[in-house]
Structures are given as structure tokens and as C-alpha cells.
Amino acid sequence: MRLPTWAMVSGAALIGLALGLAFTEAYGGYTEKGVLAGTAITARWAFPFFIAAWSASSLAKLWPGGWRTALLRRRRAIGLAFAANHFVHLGFVVVAVSQFGQTRPLFVWLLGGGAYVMIALMALTSNNAAQRWLGLARWKLLHATGGWWVLVIFANSYVSRIPIKPALAIPAVALIVLALGLRIAAALKGRVRAQAA
Ligand code: HEM
Figure 1 (cartoon, rainbow, N blue to C red):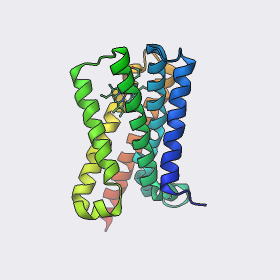
Figure 2: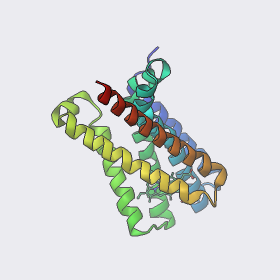
Figure 3: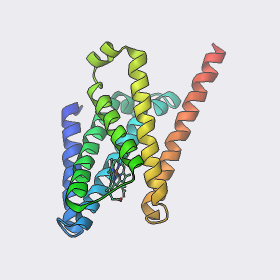
Figure 4: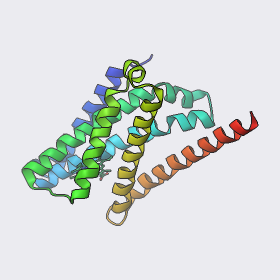
């Protein structure tokens, strides 16, 4: 049975919200520590959705068929589930900043804020009508730029956490390196095919 996109997206976001609230509760309730734990888990939960959506076309290009092609077919739903979950992260961020005085350097606001603008634009254009309206080239440029932007922020977040949370950060960085490797291999395969044609 094919789960409808709306069910996948809202289900994933509700689980994200429940995880955020459960971690907040488990780490001290409505305190700075609790809310930061909720903030962190919501980003952690969104991360695999992003990696799956970002790697879907590479996997299907490298090994067509089976679950890789199925993943590619559901890429839009998975990308939207990532976007919805990352807005749950934003909700926790807003509470951490406004209620518990969390601050970040200016470049974090610019890069993080910019990422949210890109995520919103990608989510709003993840439909056939928007794709037609933008034209394929512009649509691809928007989604490629947004995807790389988000990847760089995840990479920076997890690389910088290696010294403090190695058990979490090392597997996350390994997943990012794997996703990059798949991208490069898929691009090389495309180039070899084009030369052979
Ligand atoms: C201005 C926007 C943002 C702010 C202020 C912000 C703030 C935070 C805070 C307060 C935490 C939890 C506490 C901590 O571990 O430091 C956190 C965790 C995290 N955020 Fe964000 N965030 C923003 C945007 C983003 C974006 C756009 C991404 C990814 C594309 C992201 C990825 C992460 C990751 C990976 C974690 C760590 C999760 C973990 O511990 O597993 N954040 N963020």
C-alpha cells in the first residue's frame, strides 16, 4: 500500500514533535537544558530524511531498480517530511532563543536563516505546478542550491560536535561522506555514459 504524501509528511512531523517534547521532558522539562535537548533531537530526527532525499537520485542512477527506484519515486514526500521536521526544529529554536536567551554568532543566523528560506522555497515548489511555472532549469537550480546549503550546515554542525558527542557525530559525518561519495560516483557514471554515446 502506498502511503499518501500528506500522511507521510504529517506523520513524520508529529513523531518529530513528540520526540522533541519527550526529550524536553526527560532532560529537565521546560528549562534551558530540557528545551535544548528537544531542539537537538528534532534536528537529529530530520537529518536522515534529508540524507535519504538528497541521495535518492544518486542511488537510483548507480543501481537502478528495487528499493533505490522506490526511494526515488517517494523523494518528494521524503523531502517534504524533512522540511516539516526542520520547521519543528525551528519551533524549538524559537523557544530556546526567546525564552532561554540562547545566542549564536551573526554568521549562524545568516546561514541558518538562509537555510530556512531555502527549505521553505523548496517545500513550496515541490509540486508539478510550481515545477512547470519555474521551468526545469530554474527549479533544478533552486533545489540543488538548497540541498547543498542544508548539507553544508549539517556537515558543519556534526563535524563541530565530534569532540563533544563523538558517538553521535561520527556516524552522522560518515553518513554525509557516504552521501557525497554516492553523488560523485553517480556523476562519474553519467559522464562515462555520455562519452560512450
Ligand atoms: C538560525 C537557525 C538555527 C538556530 C538558531 C539553531 C539552533 C540550534 C540549537 C539551539 C540546537 C541545540 C543545542 C545545541 O546542540 O547546540 C541545535 C541543534 C542542531 N541543529 Fe540547529 N539551529 C538552526 C538551524 C539549523 C539548520 C538550518 C540545520 C541544518 C540544516 C540545523 C542543524 C542542527 C543540528 C544537526 C543540531 C544538532 C543535533 C544533534 O545534537 O544531534 N540547525 N540547533
